[in-house]
Image (spheres, rainbow, N blue to C red):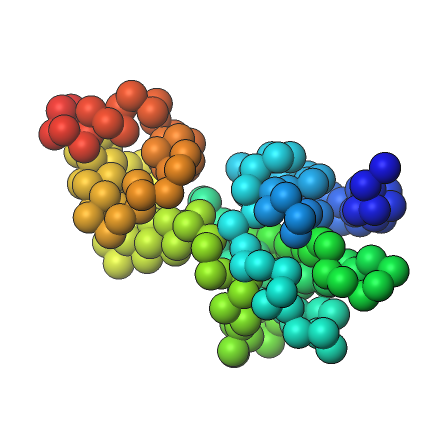
Length: 199
């Protein structure tokens, strides 16, 4: 039995209590993949690459990464906190991440404005290799700057967005095309057609 499996019941219990607003992810630092994920609203699944740094980059005296803000695939902000899971020898073996969807909070006239503000000095470890986060942020900024919504993009809008993502190097990551297709709600074949200029 993997040591990380001891934490799955806690992860599932948290999502049952706060469903549907909380997603909990257990990352396996040994494999570099997601060991378990509950209430997945980030379009990730068990076995996906974690896209984090290496375990030897975690300071020995750091067990919690304070709350930080991320951008989900749909442009919604999530507030997250990450705890380090260590073995009996205090070696980091996993990360326990709790992600809270902030959209409902923001709708209530910024009821807790201080709660949704981005934290400063987020550790590079958490974003070093996270190409999903970079794609999410780029798409979100693109839509905001043009007062557009993902659900109402025309085929031409999607083609322009995909070509801009390509120029930014978004397709260099493995499986990036599949992820982008899922986010924009088109087929993977359409992604490549749009890259070629076909509508």
